[in-house]
Image 1 (cartoon, rainbow, N blue to C red):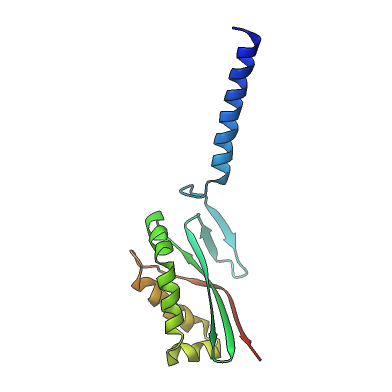
Image 2: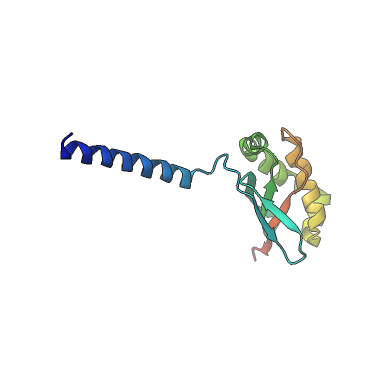
Length: 144
């Protein structure tokens, strides 16, 4: 084989390897990375790429509310179903905020009640029930 042919084959092989490595680096689908993080109370949280984070922003009277949720999913199918139903879930949470019990929980910053009401809405639209949700952030600001 000639020198040009060998160089061409090497360039093609290197390009294929770089393409595969780039795809593997950027792919966030079914890779199952297990990380263990400790919080201040030494409880372990498992982060395995199956989690869903979303936020709900709305106005309640003269206040602006922003809540960011973190939902750990047990399977990729559950995660996919949750992401497909996310607009309906967000709408359900916003509609639930107009109920007096949820409104009281928001004003008192009763995070356990807020999580309970939100978890009920999520599970109403889920393929498999979600066991637990976390509030990553909660902001209730006056528009005045």
